[in-house]
Length: 328
Image (cartoon, rainbow, N blue to C red):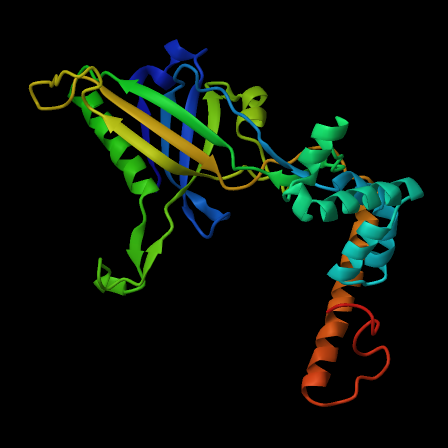
């Protein structure tokens, strides 16, 4: 049965009907992405200031000759669709395109070769700039390399327990979050321990929601804590937890020893990338799928050819390498 904690006590009571709060549900993790269906614990906390924010990042980088490669895209697609290997694809990218592209590549190649000449001191582009006032066009393009990181959400709470009950609640919340973010020894049964256990069990997963007495706040939840492509809420893990029992630099305790103030900082990180809701063009999707199938078939033929050669057998036509001139 799941344990439930909330702070402050009035958070979900009728007098707080219009107040929204953060609900943190924890689940046992099955693997890096999936979690169990049973809630391990639920913690309801007030929403701290400056916590309803998020950011997305994209990984782009400049690629020399990238603009020329893009212009030669049609030629590259022909090679890919024919099951060509990496060498064939690169050759098509370097050799494809218009006459203007070929001329640009030729000039770049000449300058590159000249940079190795002794008189240029290994820096022909700088010499060209100094003497002619021009710089070599590397035909650079900005290419997409995928998402650059998993999104994070940080919450900074301040607890001011007024009595024994609230102090105990704060202590239990901190203990549950600590146990949820830390690993467990596993693999040795009842003998699990520092030296006997061969593995660590992955810590819990978390699902976050913004809630009111009227239910979920879908307006914010869809942005802050979206669902994945399957329609399931994306899991989170706690990557950092900081507890400070004397945030003002002065130790102040209640008669029972409980801190007068405790600050808690939590950093959650999503376990999946958030992707666009835009639909992919059907033709692009179909072409991409067909290309992947062709490449897989070509790779399988190459594997059969290598196996036959290593065994000293003759490779039947169409059963081994796609072409004697293609790489493998």
